[in-house]
Length: 118
Image (cartoon, rainbow, N blue to C red; front, side, top):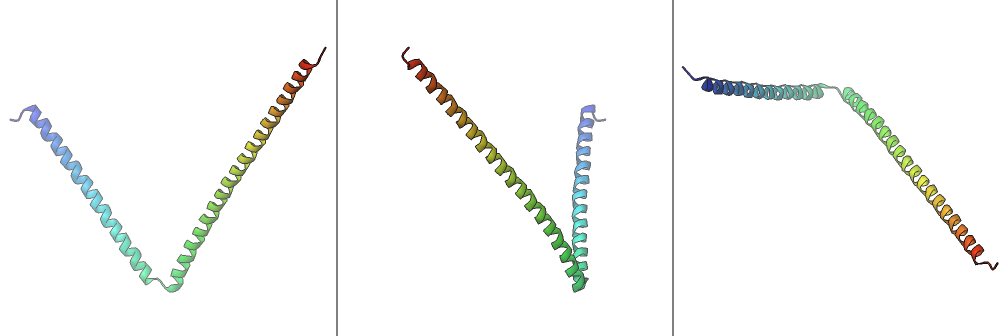
């Protein structure tokens, strides 16, 4: 009779082997299914009439045009946000410069008042 430790090791090995077989089978089956789907799609494409092919291509083109317009809209929105941010930054910079200039004028005015003879 095997010791409890040996039984535990055997159980772990058996569990790992079953898991490996299951994973391998799943991957192999998925590969077979995708191969079958590719072959069916290729066969369907070869049997399609030129009108059907043109129709499918037109649908694909329409979808791409929609995606292109959406992407252009997003890009335009991004550029607009950048432009607004630059304008805001310029306004803030001008305000800071005006404040600094006012402060400088106040300092000069104070200095002149202090330098006046009494």
